[in-house]
Length: 270
Ligand SMILES: NC(=O)C1=CN([C@@H]2O[C@H](COP(=O)(O)OP(=O)(O)OC[C@H]3O[C@@H](n4cnc5c(N)ncnc54)[C@H](OP(=O)(O)O)[C@@H]3O)[C@@H](O)[C@H]2O)C=CC1
Ligand SMILES: O=C(O)C1=N[C@H](C(=O)O)C[C@H](O)C1
Image (cartoon, rainbow, N blue to C red; front, side, top):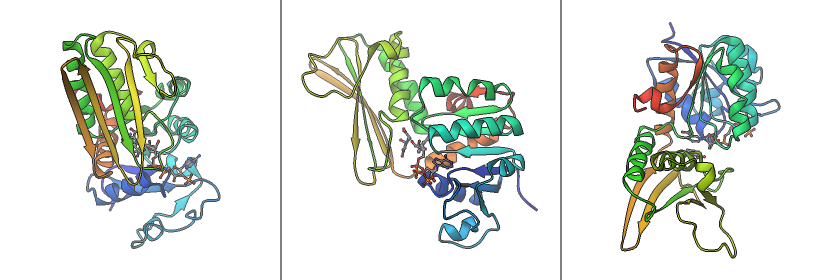
């Protein structure tokens, strides 16, 4: 007898895909209903437990996403923007909760999720950990309390495989800082400085990205003024924090009406 709702994991062979599979298998509140990989991937047709180097668990990796999703209540998806948009359409069709951790989505990509969110629950966040979501609220408060004498910089560091910058988390923190200041991030964002950039513009929110080794994810929000600095910091040392957040979002999403939600909604921090 299987426990709780059936959850499908996309991008099963990925760093987060494997962590999510372990987290769902360890949970007594849900069960693993499917594991999806793209067509031609060498995991397709194999038992996912064995493919991960462990014991068989009876879930065979498939490239037939619609078939897998139609048998589940939830899809947890940490893949890539184009794949996530395609999975959103399938989740809407199957009325499955779609938990999206994928980052690097453009404003157009996010707008393109809207039709799906009219039929199914979407929970999307660039970071699913409790710590980072709490940090967004602290960032907003500090930014609201300080004036533009304090330059705001978001500094992030990740492993050398990461393909997008600034990270989804850095953008969440930048949005929170902008909200605290009562400005739109798009009007004050400054990322990718290189060459003769000119002096820093008062009121800008800057972004810097470090890529190296196996860094799981580190984020500083720096408030720098003449004579003093405040640094708010989050350090992730284990991808399990993101997977546990995603599972929490999945279970929460089952009780919601169709719509587009984030982790602040799930954690009751909004
Ligand atoms: N919100 C959060 O809390 C977190 C978000 N992330 C985000 O999650 C995403 C994945 O990160 P990570 O696991 O490190 O990346 P990986 O590259 O390790 O994994 C991505 C997986 O998605 C698969 N994939 C990509 N495109 C498709 C497709 N079209 N159809 C099916 N599968 C596809 C990849 O397959 P293949 O290998 O064949 O390309 C791979 O298995 C990133 O956007 C990252 O920023 C990461 C951690 C936390
Ligand atoms: O790609 C990663 O690894 C991570 N991505 C997310 C992001 O872009 O912020 C979350 C976490 O920092 C790890």
